[in-house]
Image (cartoon, rainbow, N blue to C red; front, top):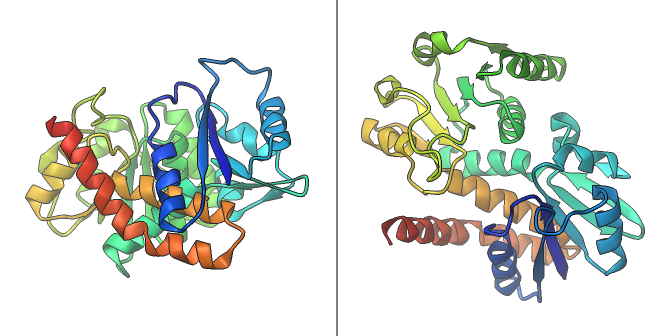
Amino acid sequence: MKLGLIGKDIMNSSSPDLHVRLGKLTGMAVSYDLFDTHEQPIASLDSEVRRVMTQGYRGVNVTYPYKEEAVSLATQVGEGATLVGAANTLVFGAGEIQAENTDFTGFISGYRATVGARRPGRVLLIGTGGVGKAVAFGLGKLGAEEIVLMDLDAGKSQRLANELTSAGFPASTIPPEALATTAARCEGLVNCTPIGHEKSPGCPLPTSLIRADQWIFDAVYVPAVTELIAAAHAAGAQVVSGVSLFVFQGVDAFKFFCEDADKRALADEQAETLFAHYKQTLLQEKCA
């Protein structure tokens, strides 16, 4: 099964390792190529997708800056891609293109695998870019009481709030100065900014705001234990790691690529093993 990833500045992506590893675990021969448009510029996403389709690829993942454009290429659009208005997975078959958003489904799967049946409650979500949108709609699907959005770009957070409300999910926005008072009345705290990444160290909110009765999610997974995650553990809060999003979005994409139901079931069964592997690997890389 030939797979790939189209995006800009992606040469350090862990997606090839994840999908080839899933292939081995499910007894499939899988190749996964990187099409970095910074290294090799393309005329358009459409032309690149048509090119890989003619070369026999089963599908591709799509990342920045092509996720929104990817939806427009599809003949079939899944629930997540429809809600979010962006796709990170394109599946090819008989001239058709199916668009899915596995950041949306992957967040839901990772949340349920970690938190179980706990309802999200009122959630403060910081950062309303691409991943923030997918997570916000995932929270809505999980039954969040309210999704409170904060972004330095007030217009962007308001647009997302309007989209969530139109989809039937209660949402509102706050300015940065209302962070502390809002966090105090929320059951969940979510970071979808780059703050905490090894290239953007720090914590997106004061750690004193984290309580033991809250749950915390950090979309950043490099390092595996960010400052926010470390503070959440120290406070006794329930933690949903960004590693879970990386693993579950990949597993969900792999399942869309697979035509065999038995292989899809096998991929599902490997999610916990893969989560443990990547969490340990990322921790070792941090310590190296």
